[in-house]
Length: 309
Ligand SMILES: C[C@@](CO)(OP(=O)(O)O)[C@H](O)COP(=O)(O)OP(=O)(O)OC[C@H]1O[C@@H](n2ccc(N)nc2=O)[C@H](O)[C@@H]1O
Ligand SMILES: Nc1ncnc2c1ncn2[C@@H]1O[C@H](COP(=O)(O)OP(=O)(O)O)[C@@H](O)[C@H]1O
Image (cartoon, rainbow, N blue to C red; front, side, top):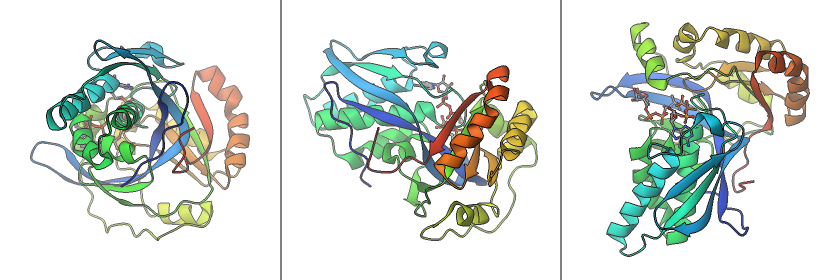
């Protein structure tokens, strides 16, 4: 797989787009407890931004942006973990290319919200440093797997059918120019807890693999197929975070909403609309309610591959 170009500016930087699971079926469980998935992951225009601002003695990080305050710039941050993992690999396999950088993260996406912001940040960091150090793009995938199940798909940052625990990636249908509305109620949801609630709630449902075409020409065609799918983590997440039900109902009640569903392990939910313009118009209607309740919203379209603005 190839991945999008980084933008050119004084400081090398790139965007880390929100991952949306249009459907998410749990198909099995590995001996180590990780769940096997079948999911259609796509990317929204909404994004964080990662920049390499200056050479530094050690890898270091500062964070700003609307969701920066909820996040420590410490050794556990996925940006630093990704930078150090690639640095170790580049140093040992290529030799000598272990220069360190100061990194800046603009955190625009809510944390622990089912849209893989941390995974996207880690993947963006890998892409940026790979370019600096001339590391082959394909070499990033094994490193990505060690950082989190969602990181490989975020390295590619293009629509993909995701299987295994997230490391098996196949091309997704070509997407229509549909509208996307994202709504997060401002409550972080723990991914391990939601998987645990899934297992406790009865676990895997046997069902045929969804059929996906090569392309969807319209949002309506896409939703007709998505209606035969679901997010298996939605009910367990709802049991932990009941406001998800209110978010889903609010999205579904908006004019021209074609589908309302939760992404990943929640709590962010998405609405699909016929066009980006109709998603933006719907978001305006939701504005008063979302401002009153402290909900984060974003409206637009899918991230189109090959760009990273
Ligand atoms: C559920 C998904 C769907 O895309 O998205 P998010 O809700 O995180 O956005 C992902 O599988 C999340 O991937 P990611 O957030 O990278 O998970 P990891 O850090 O690797 O794992 C966190 C924990 O989730 C559980 N986990 C994760 C992935 C998986 N396939 N099976 C699991 O059981 C495990 O308990 C694991 O300890
Ligand atoms: N750069 C980062 N952005 C977001 N979360 C991060 C980051 N680095 C580490 N984390 C941690 O990763 C966990 C999952 O975060 P995130 O990727 O936002 O979740 P989700 O995939 O559910 O949207 C959180 O516990 C968070 O503290």
